[in-house]
Image (cartoon, rainbow, N blue to C red):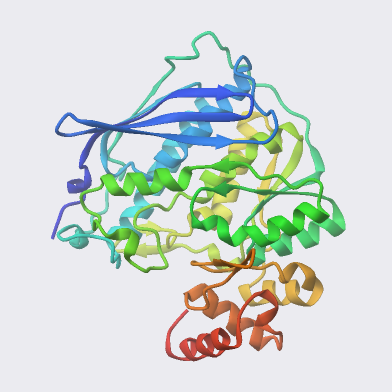
Length: 405
């Protein structure tokens, strides 16, 4: 068996050189290897309107926090991690706590469980209960913004406005449908540079026609995730060709998108941050004495509560939650398809969506597709309405009877 600290394969990760422009923020991710060589890449978020002023301390602070989120996935693998930006004590505490939680989650769910992306002997890490799972020493610097002073002040927000982290899946579609009836919805889609964006294209096009508050920032976070995986000696070189329903390493993913929505939510004085998550994503588990959240922490009520506490400490006066927390997956789809059929027709819940004649269609083969087809048939609804063909439906139902979901 292999020891946990054998995962410390790099010397240092620096998140630095933060650049704040009116419609774009970016930072360098510089990785120092143990042989003394370095590689670097840039994490970017861009917007179609002005959301940042580099002379404004609050804007620079928000940019600094945004740039840090991807790095929270890598606390197990570095001796040192340096965050060079404008951070206050609430930020530092939040980043330390979330990195430690993510380190534990990744250890349990990526290294102590089945993961086809791992090379031996890293697929036989020995479970050990530890006081601290994060290996990296965390350092904070402020090289570029010493002239800016961050004064915490409370913000007034409109509690009738709802920012909805939107993806094209059933949960965010239903959340939008409900809020459209009772308040002012602001669906925000993070257009990440990878194929994950394919699931959102149909609903984003539809919202652009019916909802003036729709927004679509862009981020290259998917490229940074893949670039980081390529540096890791314990991941198989052909990881991009392995068909799987999990990511090789990362588990702190929702926050990477969520923080990309915050410049819009803050500028529009939105009081509610909504994430579409159902009841059974809030789970607690235990693996050989190591408590964890079954790889679903960033989809749980614990995550929402932690973010709400963080927003309160920052004086932002926002609440984060899911309207759907008391519902099962089947009930969510039932309400969506029965009450908001025009929204359900935009649904793409699929790990490998593809484009045909300008419309995104589901693959019909992945575990998500099997679930959606099965649930729609159980509800006496037609899966063809959201893009499944007769052949895909037949195939999915057959696979559903033979394989677990």
